Amino acid sequence: MGDEITDFRQNFKAEANSLSCRFYENQYPEPEEVVMVNVTNISDMGAYVTLLEYDDIEGMILLSELSRRRIRSINKLVRVNRTEIVMVIRVDKEKGYIDLSKRRVDPEDVIKCEERYNKAKAVHSVLRHVAEVKGLKLEHLYQKIGWPLYKKYGHAYDGFKIALNDATEEGGADIFADLDIEEDVKSALVTYIKRRLAPQPVKIRADIEVTCFTYEGIDEIKSALTEGEDKGTTDAPVKIKLIAPPMYVMTSMTLDKELGIETMNLAIEAISVAIKAKGGSLDVKMAPKAVTLREESELQAMLDRLALEQEEVDGDAPEDV
Image (cartoon, rainbow, N blue to C red; front, side, top):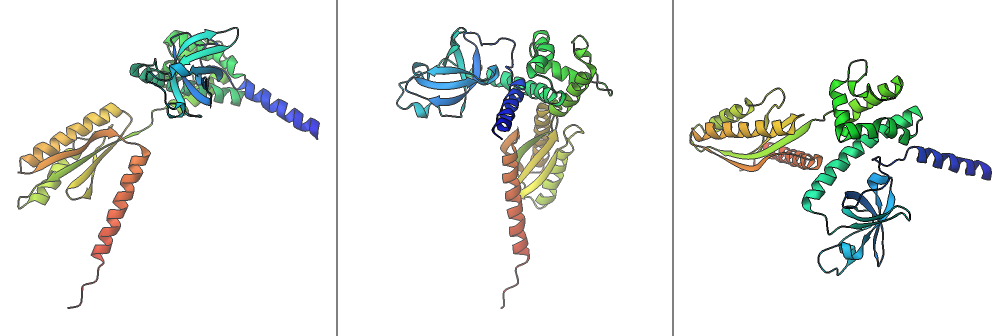
Protein backbone atom coordinates (compact mmCIF):
# COMPACT_ATOMS: atom_id res chain seq x y z
CA MET A 1 0.00 0.00 0.00
CA GLY A 2 2.86 2.38 0.87
CA ASP A 3 4.53 1.77 -2.50
CA GLU A 4 1.26 2.53 -4.32
CA ILE A 5 0.89 5.84 -2.48
CA THR A 6 4.51 6.73 -3.26
CA ASP A 7 4.01 5.92 -6.95
CA PHE A 8 0.82 7.99 -7.03
CA ARG A 9 2.57 10.98 -5.49
CA GLN A 10 5.49 10.69 -7.89
CA ASN A 11 3.17 10.43 -10.90
CA PHE A 12 1.09 13.36 -9.67
CA LYS A 13 4.20 15.49 -9.17
CA ALA A 14 5.56 14.55 -12.59
CA GLU A 15 2.25 15.44 -14.23
CA ALA A 16 2.12 18.77 -12.40
CA ASN A 17 5.67 19.58 -13.48
CA SER A 18 4.86 18.78 -17.10
CA LEU A 19 2.03 21.36 -16.99
CA SER A 20 4.09 24.14 -15.43
CA CYS A 21 6.26 26.64 -17.25
CA ARG A 22 7.24 30.30 -17.17
CA PHE A 23 5.36 32.64 -19.48
CA TYR A 24 8.40 34.05 -21.27
CA GLU A 25 11.50 32.58 -22.89
CA ASN A 26 13.90 34.23 -20.43
CA GLN A 27 14.24 32.12 -17.31
CA TYR A 28 14.70 35.20 -15.13
CA PRO A 29 13.37 38.76 -15.39
CA GLU A 30 15.71 41.61 -16.23
CA PRO A 31 16.64 44.45 -13.82
CA GLU A 32 14.10 47.34 -13.95
CA GLU A 33 11.47 44.98 -15.35
CA VAL A 34 8.05 45.35 -13.66
CA VAL A 35 6.51 42.00 -12.71
CA MET A 36 3.46 40.51 -11.02
CA VAL A 37 4.09 38.63 -7.75
CA ASN A 38 2.17 36.87 -5.01
CA VAL A 39 3.16 37.41 -1.37
CA THR A 40 3.89 34.10 0.41
CA ASN A 41 5.52 35.14 3.70
CA ILE A 42 6.42 38.28 5.65
CA SER A 43 9.55 38.60 7.79
CA ASP A 44 11.61 41.31 9.46
CA MET A 45 13.72 41.58 6.30
CA GLY A 46 10.79 42.12 3.95
CA ALA A 47 8.23 40.10 2.03
CA TYR A 48 8.91 36.79 0.30
CA VAL A 49 7.04 36.44 -2.99
CA THR A 50 6.69 34.20 -6.01
CA LEU A 51 6.97 35.65 -9.52
CA LEU A 52 3.74 34.59 -11.24
CA GLU A 53 5.07 35.08 -14.77
CA TYR A 54 8.26 33.11 -14.11
CA ASP A 55 6.89 29.77 -12.92
CA ASP A 56 6.63 30.94 -9.29
CA ILE A 57 10.36 31.36 -8.67
CA GLU A 58 11.03 33.10 -5.36
CA GLY A 59 12.01 36.71 -4.82
CA MET A 60 11.99 39.22 -1.99
CA ILE A 61 10.64 42.74 -1.62
CA LEU A 62 13.23 44.30 0.68
CA LEU A 63 11.91 46.14 3.71
CA SER A 64 13.53 49.38 2.54
CA GLU A 65 11.86 49.00 -0.88
CA LEU A 66 8.28 48.65 0.35
CA SER A 67 7.40 52.33 0.59
CA ARG A 68 8.84 55.81 0.07
CA ARG A 69 7.45 56.80 3.46
CA ARG A 70 8.50 55.63 6.90
CA ILE A 71 7.21 52.12 7.55
CA ARG A 72 5.20 51.85 10.77
CA SER A 73 3.66 48.45 10.06
CA ILE A 74 4.74 46.14 7.26
CA ASN A 75 1.37 44.37 7.41
CA LYS A 76 -0.36 47.54 6.24
CA LEU A 77 1.76 47.59 3.09
CA VAL A 78 1.72 43.92 2.05
CA ARG A 79 -0.29 40.88 3.07
CA VAL A 80 0.16 37.16 2.49
CA ASN A 81 -1.63 35.85 -0.64
CA ARG A 82 -2.05 39.36 -2.01
CA THR A 83 -0.92 40.07 -5.58
CA GLU A 84 1.53 42.96 -5.96
CA ILE A 85 3.23 44.73 -8.86
CA VAL A 86 6.94 45.29 -8.22
CA MET A 87 10.15 46.29 -9.99
CA VAL A 88 13.16 43.99 -10.28
CA ILE A 89 16.28 45.53 -8.71
CA ARG A 90 18.84 42.70 -8.84
CA VAL A 91 18.98 39.17 -10.20
CA ASP A 92 21.61 36.67 -9.06
CA LYS A 93 21.09 33.79 -11.50
CA GLU A 94 23.73 31.58 -9.86
CA LYS A 95 22.24 31.78 -6.36
CA GLY A 96 18.68 32.34 -7.55
CA TYR A 97 18.23 35.58 -5.60
CA ILE A 98 15.83 38.18 -6.96
CA ASP A 99 15.51 41.50 -5.11
CA LEU A 100 12.37 43.51 -5.76
CA SER A 101 10.97 46.95 -5.03
CA LYS A 102 7.41 48.12 -4.56
CA ARG A 103 8.18 51.80 -3.95
CA ARG A 104 9.90 52.29 -7.34
CA VAL A 105 6.83 51.31 -9.36
CA ASP A 106 5.07 54.21 -11.11
CA PRO A 107 1.28 54.28 -11.77
CA GLU A 108 1.98 53.96 -15.51
CA ASP A 109 4.01 50.82 -14.83
CA VAL A 110 1.06 49.29 -12.97
CA ILE A 111 -1.29 49.71 -15.93
CA LYS A 112 1.22 48.28 -18.42
CA CYS A 113 2.10 45.35 -16.16
CA GLU A 114 -1.54 44.44 -15.54
CA GLU A 115 -2.31 44.52 -19.26
CA ARG A 116 0.74 42.40 -20.15
CA TYR A 117 0.09 39.93 -17.35
CA ASN A 118 -3.59 39.44 -18.19
CA LYS A 119 -2.72 38.80 -21.83
CA ALA A 120 0.09 36.41 -20.89
CA LYS A 121 -2.20 34.58 -18.47
CA ALA A 122 -4.74 34.05 -21.26
CA VAL A 123 -2.00 32.64 -23.52
CA HIS A 124 -0.83 30.40 -20.69
CA SER A 125 -4.36 29.10 -20.17
CA VAL A 126 -4.70 28.15 -23.85
CA LEU A 127 -1.32 26.40 -24.06
CA ARG A 128 -1.82 24.60 -20.75
CA HIS A 129 -5.20 23.28 -21.88
CA VAL A 130 -3.76 22.00 -25.16
CA ALA A 131 -0.81 20.41 -23.33
CA GLU A 132 -3.17 18.62 -20.95
CA VAL A 133 -5.53 17.43 -23.68
CA LYS A 134 -2.73 16.21 -25.94
CA GLY A 135 -0.54 14.80 -23.17
CA LEU A 136 2.35 17.16 -23.97
CA LYS A 137 4.77 19.10 -21.81
CA LEU A 138 3.72 22.71 -21.47
CA GLU A 139 7.28 23.94 -21.99
CA HIS A 140 7.37 22.05 -25.30
CA LEU A 141 4.35 24.05 -26.52
CA TYR A 142 5.94 27.29 -25.38
CA GLN A 143 9.09 26.43 -27.34
CA LYS A 144 7.13 25.49 -30.46
CA ILE A 145 4.29 28.05 -30.28
CA GLY A 146 4.29 30.57 -27.45
CA TRP A 147 7.79 32.01 -27.53
CA PRO A 148 8.02 32.20 -31.35
CA LEU A 149 4.74 34.17 -31.34
CA TYR A 150 6.11 36.53 -28.69
CA LYS A 151 9.08 37.24 -30.98
CA LYS A 152 6.96 37.68 -34.09
CA TYR A 153 4.07 39.74 -32.72
CA GLY A 154 5.50 41.34 -29.58
CA HIS A 155 3.03 39.34 -27.52
CA ALA A 156 1.70 35.84 -28.17
CA TYR A 157 -1.78 37.07 -27.25
CA ASP A 158 -1.78 39.39 -30.27
CA GLY A 159 -0.89 36.42 -32.45
CA PHE A 160 -3.75 34.43 -30.93
CA LYS A 161 -6.18 37.26 -31.68
CA ILE A 162 -5.08 37.22 -35.33
CA ALA A 163 -5.57 33.45 -35.36
CA LEU A 164 -9.06 33.99 -33.96
CA ASN A 165 -9.92 36.36 -36.80
CA ASP A 166 -8.25 34.31 -39.52
CA ALA A 167 -9.33 30.83 -38.41
CA THR A 168 -11.11 28.88 -41.17
CA GLU A 169 -14.10 26.59 -40.70
CA GLU A 170 -11.75 23.60 -40.85
CA GLY A 171 -9.79 24.97 -37.87
CA GLY A 172 -6.64 26.20 -39.60
CA ALA A 173 -4.99 29.57 -39.13
CA ASP A 174 -2.36 31.26 -41.25
CA ILE A 175 -0.18 32.41 -38.35
CA PHE A 176 0.66 28.81 -37.43
CA ALA A 177 1.80 27.86 -40.93
CA ASP A 178 5.49 28.47 -40.18
CA LEU A 179 5.43 26.72 -36.79
CA ASP A 180 6.67 23.16 -36.34
CA ILE A 181 3.51 21.67 -34.82
CA GLU A 182 1.32 18.71 -35.74
CA GLU A 183 -2.08 19.25 -37.36
CA ASP A 184 -4.01 17.78 -34.44
CA VAL A 185 -2.21 20.13 -32.03
CA LYS A 186 -2.93 23.07 -34.35
CA SER A 187 -6.60 22.09 -34.52
CA ALA A 188 -6.88 21.78 -30.73
CA LEU A 189 -5.10 25.12 -30.34
CA VAL A 190 -7.42 27.02 -32.68
CA THR A 191 -10.51 25.39 -31.17
CA TYR A 192 -9.58 26.49 -27.67
CA ILE A 193 -8.49 29.95 -28.82
CA LYS A 194 -12.01 30.40 -30.21
CA ARG A 195 -13.50 29.32 -26.91
CA ARG A 196 -11.12 31.22 -24.61
CA LEU A 197 -10.48 34.46 -26.50
CA ALA A 198 -13.71 35.03 -28.40
CA PRO A 199 -15.07 38.51 -27.59
CA GLN A 200 -17.57 38.48 -24.73
CA PRO A 201 -20.56 40.83 -24.64
CA VAL A 202 -20.13 43.86 -22.39
CA LYS A 203 -23.04 45.53 -20.66
CA ILE A 204 -23.01 49.33 -20.78
CA ARG A 205 -25.23 51.17 -18.33
CA ALA A 206 -26.23 54.78 -17.65
CA ASP A 207 -28.69 56.23 -15.12
CA ILE A 208 -30.68 59.30 -16.09
CA GLU A 209 -33.36 61.46 -14.52
CA VAL A 210 -35.97 62.79 -16.96
CA THR A 211 -38.68 65.27 -15.94
CA CYS A 212 -41.36 67.25 -17.73
CA PHE A 213 -44.08 69.05 -15.75
CA THR A 214 -46.23 70.21 -18.66
CA TYR A 215 -49.81 68.98 -19.13
CA GLU A 216 -48.65 66.21 -21.46
CA GLY A 217 -45.40 65.62 -19.59
CA ILE A 218 -45.73 61.82 -19.31
CA ASP A 219 -46.30 61.42 -23.05
CA GLU A 220 -43.42 63.80 -23.81
CA ILE A 221 -41.06 61.74 -21.61
CA LYS A 222 -42.12 58.52 -23.34
CA SER A 223 -41.56 60.13 -26.74
CA ALA A 224 -38.11 61.43 -25.73
CA LEU A 225 -37.07 58.03 -24.38
CA THR A 226 -38.15 56.44 -27.66
CA GLU A 227 -35.88 58.91 -29.46
CA GLY A 228 -33.03 57.62 -27.32
CA GLU A 229 -33.77 53.95 -27.98
CA ASP A 230 -33.91 54.70 -31.72
CA LYS A 231 -30.21 55.69 -31.53
CA GLY A 232 -29.36 52.07 -30.79
CA THR A 233 -27.86 49.93 -33.54
CA THR A 234 -27.63 46.23 -34.29
CA ASP A 235 -24.15 46.16 -32.74
CA ALA A 236 -25.18 48.30 -29.76
CA PRO A 237 -28.94 48.28 -29.10
CA VAL A 238 -30.25 50.69 -26.46
CA LYS A 239 -32.93 49.73 -23.93
CA ILE A 240 -34.47 52.01 -21.30
CA LYS A 241 -36.31 50.92 -18.14
CA LEU A 242 -38.03 52.87 -15.41
CA ILE A 243 -36.42 52.53 -11.98
CA ALA A 244 -38.75 54.90 -10.15
CA PRO A 245 -40.03 58.23 -11.49
CA PRO A 246 -38.16 60.26 -12.62
CA MET A 247 -35.18 57.82 -12.67
CA TYR A 248 -34.48 55.59 -15.68
CA VAL A 249 -31.72 53.06 -16.42
CA MET A 250 -30.29 52.75 -19.93
CA THR A 251 -28.47 49.58 -21.00
CA SER A 252 -26.71 48.21 -24.06
CA MET A 253 -25.17 44.79 -24.67
CA THR A 254 -22.29 44.99 -27.14
CA LEU A 255 -19.04 43.31 -28.13
CA ASP A 256 -17.38 46.70 -28.51
CA LYS A 257 -17.16 48.63 -25.24
CA GLU A 258 -16.17 51.94 -26.86
CA LEU A 259 -18.94 51.67 -29.43
CA GLY A 260 -21.45 50.92 -26.68
CA ILE A 261 -20.44 53.98 -24.64
CA GLU A 262 -20.49 56.20 -27.75
CA THR A 263 -23.96 54.94 -28.73
CA MET A 264 -25.31 55.50 -25.22
CA ASN A 265 -23.99 59.07 -25.20
CA LEU A 266 -25.72 59.70 -28.54
CA ALA A 267 -28.94 58.29 -27.09
CA ILE A 268 -28.68 60.53 -24.00
CA GLU A 269 -28.10 63.57 -26.24
CA ALA A 270 -31.17 62.67 -28.33
CA ILE A 271 -33.35 62.34 -25.22
CA SER A 272 -32.01 65.63 -23.83
CA VAL A 273 -32.74 67.56 -27.03
CA ALA A 274 -36.23 66.06 -27.35
CA ILE A 275 -37.33 66.65 -23.75
CA LYS A 276 -35.87 70.18 -23.52
CA ALA A 277 -37.82 71.12 -26.66
CA LYS A 278 -40.98 70.23 -24.72
CA GLY A 279 -40.04 72.16 -21.61
CA GLY A 280 -38.54 69.28 -19.67
CA SER A 281 -35.04 68.42 -18.50
CA LEU A 282 -32.55 65.55 -18.32
CA ASP A 283 -29.93 64.98 -15.64
CA VAL A 284 -27.26 62.27 -16.03
CA LYS A 285 -26.88 60.54 -12.65
CA MET A 286 -24.37 57.96 -13.89
CA ALA A 287 -22.53 58.41 -17.17
CA PRO A 288 -22.36 55.42 -19.55
CA LYS A 289 -19.87 52.79 -18.36
CA ALA A 290 -19.26 49.05 -18.48
CA VAL A 291 -20.82 47.52 -15.38
CA THR A 292 -19.81 44.52 -13.32
CA LEU A 293 -21.97 41.52 -12.48
CA ARG A 294 -22.24 42.78 -8.89
CA GLU A 295 -23.57 46.16 -9.99
CA GLU A 296 -26.13 44.47 -12.21
CA SER A 297 -27.20 42.16 -9.39
CA GLU A 298 -27.69 45.16 -7.10
CA LEU A 299 -29.74 46.94 -9.80
CA GLN A 300 -31.92 43.87 -10.37
CA ALA A 301 -32.47 43.46 -6.63
CA MET A 302 -33.61 47.10 -6.43
CA LEU A 303 -35.95 46.68 -9.41
CA ASP A 304 -37.44 43.52 -7.87
CA ARG A 305 -37.96 45.33 -4.55
CA LEU A 306 -39.66 48.27 -6.24
CA ALA A 307 -41.90 45.93 -8.23
CA LEU A 308 -42.89 44.12 -5.04
CA GLU A 309 -43.66 47.40 -3.27
CA GLN A 310 -45.80 48.48 -6.22
CA GLU A 311 -47.74 45.20 -6.11
CA GLU A 312 -48.38 45.70 -2.39
CA VAL A 313 -49.68 49.22 -3.00
CA ASP A 314 -51.94 48.08 -5.85
CA GLY A 315 -53.25 45.24 -3.73
CA ASP A 316 -54.10 47.29 -0.64
CA ALA A 317 -57.71 46.91 0.39
CA PRO A 318 -59.73 50.13 0.70
CA GLU A 319 -60.16 51.35 4.24
CA ASP A 320 -63.60 51.09 5.83
CA VAL A 321 -65.36 54.40 6.15
